[in-house]
Image 1: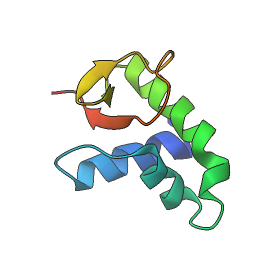
Image 2: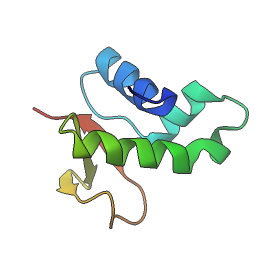
Image 3: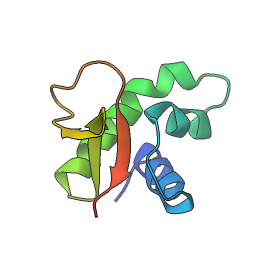
Length: 78
């Protein structure tokens, strides 16, 4: 069972060919309070990495979302 944040990530990735920023998913969940949803979205991205559905990148390189600091991008696994 996926969370709302996981579903938002997957929906956005399904509508695009590239990557998304976690803030895109947070804004989809709560346009006005998206900043408060960022930790939830980053946690959801970690969960989707664990299931092999997405990768987290920084500067185009795949990184471990548990240790990544700073801006990240999310993409579907090829």
